[in-house]
Structure formats: structure tokens, C-alpha cells
Amino acid sequence: MRWCSSHLLALFILSMQSLSSSAWSKELFSPDNREIVSEGKALYQEQCASCHGKNLEGEPNWRRPNADMTMPAPPHNDTGHTWHHTDEVLFNLTKFGLAKYLNQPDYKSNMPAYEGVLTDDEIKAVLSFIKSSWSTTMREHQDHLNSQ
Image (cartoon, rainbow, N blue to C red; front, side, top):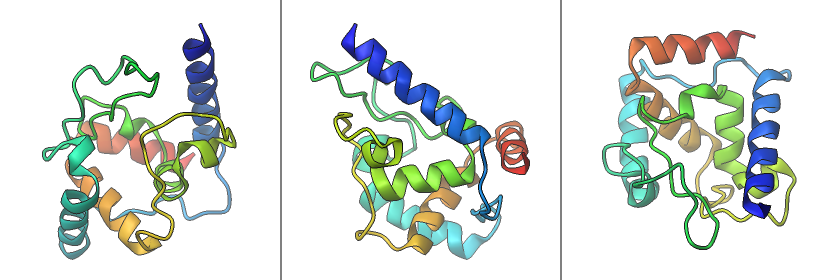
């Protein structure tokens, strides 16, 4: 029950933050810029692929908690939920990590924060690479979220 409550709270906060946009530029990523996507792909392979998969496939059973109650790394392709979030949310989750972003210091996650590891532009490049892999339908859905 503890897992369920804390993860449901985290999902609720994420969904609410996806709906509320700040003064950020709505679209932060450049999935059609070959140079940025190429840089992002290299950084993804170096920093992210060990958990999220070489082909963005995520870990097996990514919807079920691990024994330590952390969640496996989700896929970043169309089968996952990355495209359900705005650019702003994805950027902040990547930069600050889940616990800090959700302001839940006790939230257990294997997802590291990349603040101080990658620059803001490098984070945007990685996320541009991920977004470049999505189908037109998923990109349009996520672009619609960004326009809200």
C-alpha cells in the first residue's frame, strides 16, 4: 500500500505539472535538427542507454516496481509514457531527478539527476534525440501538450 500511495502521488503531481506551464518556451527540443539529434544520440548512449535501453526500449516489466520498490526505467519510444509529458516537465525531471522535481526528498528512484553532469543544452539534445524517434502521432500529441 505504501508503494501504491507514494507512486500515485508522484504520478498525480507529474500530471498536474504537465498541465501547468510556466513562462518557459513551450517547445524546448529540436527533434528535426540533425546536428542536435546526433549529439543527443551520442549522449544518450553514454548516459542513458544502460537503463533505458540502447534502442529506447526501457527495462522489462517497467510498470511493476522492483524488489526495492523503485520503478524500472521506462521505454522512451512510443510504447512508453515519455511523450505524455511536456518538454518542460521532461527537462526538469532529467535535470533535477524525480525526488527534487517532485519536492519529495524520500521518493526512491534509480533515475539520477543530471544537474552538474550534463549542461542544459546537452539535456535538451538528449531529449531531442528521444523525441526524434517518436511516431508522428506521438510527436503531435506531445506538441499539443506543449502548446497548452
